[in-house]
Image 1 (cartoon, rainbow, N blue to C red):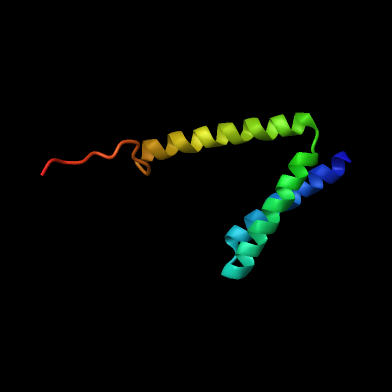
Image 2 (cartoon, rainbow, N blue to C red):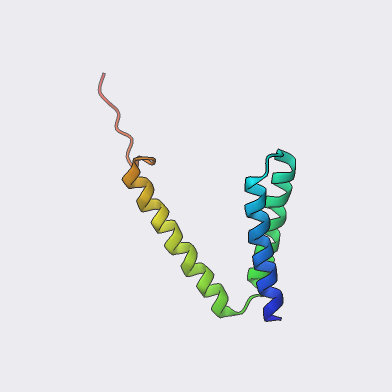
Length: 84
């Protein structure tokens, strides 16, 4: 059962990655949707330890990307409006 969960999660993430890199829009969208379904399915069947690990990993990744985008100026938190 454990190996099935890992295979579902891994193939789901792989399908999402290939779908993002795909040149064809239809095939890319189909791969991303298939990957999302497989990753969610694998995550719901996974033991609690793997679910917590994936959740912590996603939180750390989101905070890292948020901090790096603020430093690079890609995302403005407050839009300043200049008086005319």
